[in-house]
Image 1: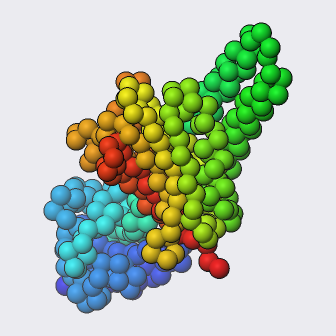
Image 2: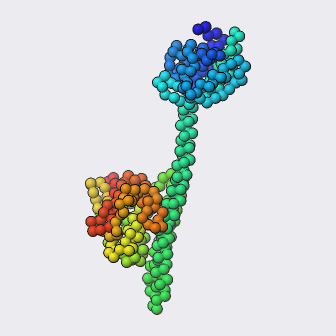
Length: 359
């Protein structure tokens, strides 16, 4: 092989000075033979300098990306092309070639500036995945918001309906009507909390978690659905016996889980002769607190058990199928676990566990 002219070495040095944004420089002749390259280019492909100089540039590209050879002839204008590079270890990576012709001692050489596009491709893929995930998030948030707002809105309707009935009595109880309106007002406040929680998540990508007594959080959630349970003649027993019960949670989210489980229990028992619901807490394994919502409904169909907490799985004629999926996401975001199992007395027990706060 003819020695590399000093003028080529000088042009390589000049190119290296002017092309700091590139990852390597290679000089080729019209036959595609590597006449010179810098150490950065050799390292990019995983070779030593003497392993590449004098070899065909094809050793640095996969067979499917060798059409660049068609452009290596005198008079070729500068070109920019994206092809794949082939490293010594056999791995393939995306790269960009910026090729310019130079004439040294009446010989045409092609100075190829090489940029490794691996990081850019990862970034582009990340942007694509982020956009796809964002669309999924928007879709799930829309469905979830419709589901979560339906609960307090239904409760408001029930309280106002009871208040209206009370006012139609011959001797309406002002105290009872005031109590019902207070309960409806509490549901309005709950809607406000849900919306604030959603705005907080959108703004920061997370929700605030604070130390809370889980028994108190569950008791409040039970109050949200008391009217619905009474409307369907369901006897509810609340046994919040776990102590200690301090957990670090987002109160609104955990209340959403409990309300969702209670509403599911109410709806499951609508056509049952026996209608009993039990909400309870207890300590397990020393550092976990378990909450159970048990019903005496018909139980779970076999075909939905395996995908019960998946999106858009529902046993309700008009259900969205997002409540249990959202509940699972919330509990897992709190480092907990949620599951369902048969109730020994008939029906289903939905349970979740959360870690107790450090003392």
